[in-house]
Length: 176
Image (tube, rainbow, N blue to C red):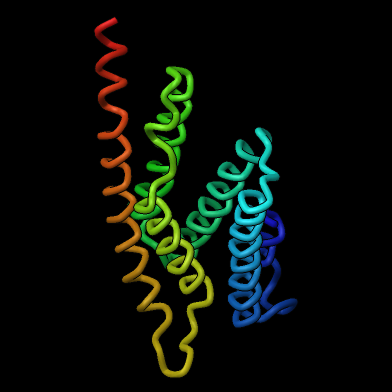
């Protein structure tokens, strides 16, 4: 979905209007987010998880979010520092999880409710920022901007949370 998602914005305005670019990109992002959630839900519910799926799912999620944030930065809708905080955290926590898995302590940094809340705020904010246009008089762009800043705060908070959880294993490994 990422190439299609990004490709929409490279079409000329004669081919597709700016309104339709916003609408289509928001719909594609929404479809990706909903199908990702549904896939994870069904895998857990039906006990159909796989090692490959457990690896690929978070990578695909992070790539979609990174692509959307970079697009929004290039459009001047999101500040680069916000995108850096969110993308940087995702890379750092992915590396932390990999390291913890090598130490046999992957459960210590398993996805938490805070991480799920952070992801929800990120996804809603990005969706609103992609669409940008008012809905029933609600200034979507303004709301999306507030939510992306809140998502960035949650992103930092969740990073500190995961690092704190991993600290006992990190310090123990350093002593060995």
